[in-house]
Length: 485
Image (cartoon, rainbow, N blue to C red):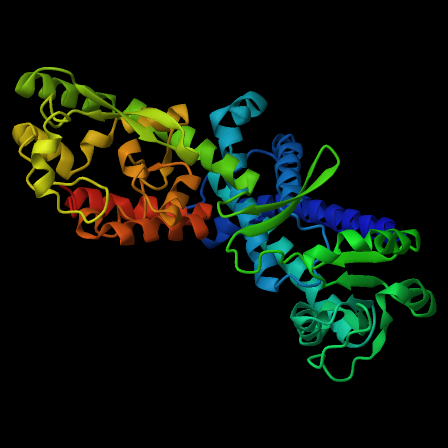
């Protein structure tokens, strides 16, 4: 019954969200066609096509926003989710909605097929996303503030019994007690073997022992039972879980099996089998798919636009040093996958064979090999290409193939990885990239340990927005040639 009620609430909120997207569709058309021309006639002088011509885009908008909203996880219970987290989730949905909506409209020329003319208003597309975002944010804020106010007044709350008297149980109780607006009320603690810890918060009774849990939940209005027990006790309590399940009691488990790990914990399902997943790398499939889509679109576009530059560089290498234009090297990619990395050749063709001769000139303290004023560089052309990172242009092909990403830790060679300490290998848990935090933080001017720390910082805090910030900051760094060798 509780599950059916939760589904009904989620369906109602999702329907309201889609209704607000529809409202934003028409409201943005009205603003663009009626209000903005009056406010800025010189900027918005062009008249929009009739509203009837825009209506075929409404199902597309609903499909995109509906899919993004569903994949964002906004329709689960959010009693314990901070308002700012939910706000950022809605903003991300609308930003990606705008990107996907625009790409579909202009890349596939849907507007030309449906309207039979040039294109729809770019201002209207942007305005639609902004209005939809504002309406959805207002709705979420109103629902959250209203529900929290109702819960603080003693309505719409759920009662909780906590099994266990250890530190985890105490932490759960204190957290619930300090967030009254979550809408939970603690009925008390249930002990294991009658042992009571002196650390239990005052004011909460001991309801009994776990062996009497059925009698406890039969005599008291218990909505949720939270098990805060050691993992070795879980198997022995299977019969207890089944008895609670028979009574329709919602059961939760404190899953701090490895309290000192930094990995993010997720509960997943594999063909009906629940899996507890620990991951230190990003796992949001929608965001990772969007990252890959941006990689494909940007690398294909840059390769096409940069073809004259690529041909000019290839010709310059041929004329000045002869030999092969491209340098190929095996590198380690995602989780150690080997791939062939492509660069414009800026060194003599036997550079790898001469590496041992220059080991004493290596200025890096780790396994990375970097030599200032490397004598193997092929004269002014090679130095110019390396200074402004033009030798990296062929790696756009690696990005297009999927070996690399636009942003990510730089790909190491297998010999370097073989010398990594265990904690340094975690930098391989994300696909390597053309640029990264190291690239915009000084490159060869920083030591190896700091380089690895920057890569791990990127992995731990990755968001699509961070990628855009790094790409934006890479431009002046590359143009200045700072930190290159």
